Length: 404
Image (tube, rainbow, N blue to C red; front, top):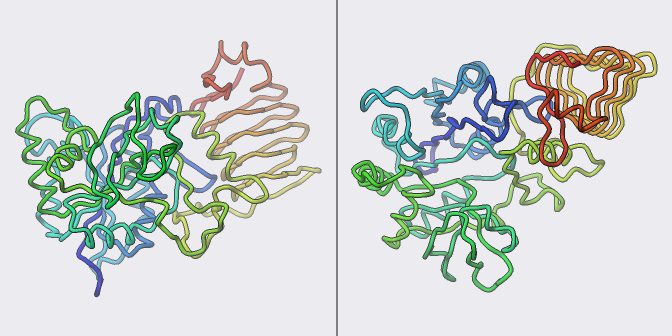
């Protein structure tokens, strides 16, 4: 767009998502439904498009059909204006091999960069739930003259051992990039807080191409963006951190400002849904100034009959509620029969809950059927024999399962 830097966006969406099993048994992690209407990939794409970055490539690999279909049918921009969001499958352009890491995925897809000829390349992950204005990060990147800028979120130092951690000086220059260190570095001036990498990067195109080519020729590399490319540029003194706390999104509230969730585990995915359903949600999907965009199915409004009710819950279109729903996220085309109780649960599209059934603290994937009188999440020992139960006790039924 006029007045903006020429930016190409690359979204890394090839994740297998093993820790989200069984939700990833039949789909890539970025294609996992979230929040009633959305898929995880919609959050990063919404942030980029809302910021005016409208030339976007989504790199896919693992079980990508539903993800490719969602992007192709939902994310249609204006060809007349040169705008596009396109899925790019692994193409084996450099030989008969799949991607061996996130850096290799981009190296094998450098034709996308060469064709677009951008000044800067924004490389974001597709697995997180958050709002962000990437334009502010690009502006900071240009101001510093860095080869790469890494988005960092402030986390308590005691919890930072689970993240890639950023060590930086007072100017924001990164002096160290450490993967899950036992002794995390602290933010300058605050010994109790660490910058954790969000997996979001802005590169000057020249620096990106140089680093990828050097990495491709290194037989000892894992060809990973966070593990290899960023440390390389840190060693050259060309990396800066962007403090996520400096990012401001139109329409945000004090309560949801700075919200970011890595939903890479069942428990994190569940808790992120629970963040949506309070009276004053920790993450507000109703901010229409910076909307999370998607395509909704052509279904009628939700209907409540025979005394059916939903309290502190979200209910998607096409759903028919005859039972009682509390503290839950109910997606589209869900039926909850009379006499049934759904508490603290996440129901994905097409779920059917029979009469007198009880579903508590559970995640039911698409088209799961819970027969009349069945109990889910009531007896954890029994559930563990039949279904997946997370470390925090969330019961998960995979796609299309009929409960016992």
